[in-house]
Length: 332
Image (cartoon, rainbow, N blue to C red):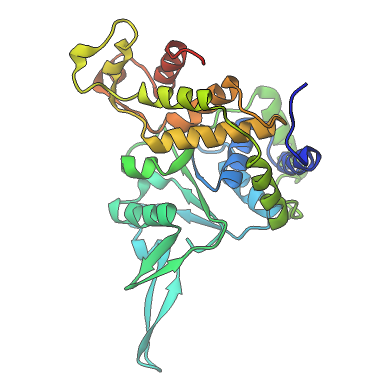
């Protein structure tokens, strides 16, 4: 019999209510829903990658309603300015002084739509918000609301007029989720809901209070990760880092290293441990098992690996490399 966290009935009730609320508008997409829930509990940011029309924006908006969070959607474009994101100083002629006009980033939940279309200065302003939970307007820094997290989307198939996200910014995202096409049955349900006018027509009642979120975070603090599993997590992340001298590679164990230019940072180890504990909480356990780590390794690591030219030439993705690493690193 698995050991449960204290108050697991309430944890299960809160999670079930949120999932049921999301299901009123979102059909399927379990990984997306679980990823958003994970980010909310962990206080992290999420990068969503998928083609247009897969309900990414609707999912984020629905979650903000269920949690009674302030929500802002920012459409990133090549002509966007940092002031369009964080705000600016406005001169008041009546008082001959400047006042602060805060931008849309001052919200609990910010949807950065097509984030890779914004130029470097806008990315820099967003990076400060994500990393420091604050923005600087003029000479003054302003704290962002608590909680604050960014859910950013990018289109994987349309690259014209886009900018590659810098590695420092990618590393600030706790998770990167791939949003797949729905199954034919799920798509039929979506179409029927749209015809009936039941898809996003009415605002949903809030189901997660600040007290509920605090309770989930307190329950998470009870979930333990054995030191041997912490070592396993660190070994997985360390295995993604290319050797300084490629001649020291041990065949065939490290033959994948030629496909990597840069590997995961220690922030990835921290994120993998945290999300594995949240995965255990979702399963009703008070302890992490290796399967929790393997499940979360893909969304935590895939955006932190910088692939080499050889990987592209051989048609390999970050997920292929992660699978290879998982198969080679021995379980504790």
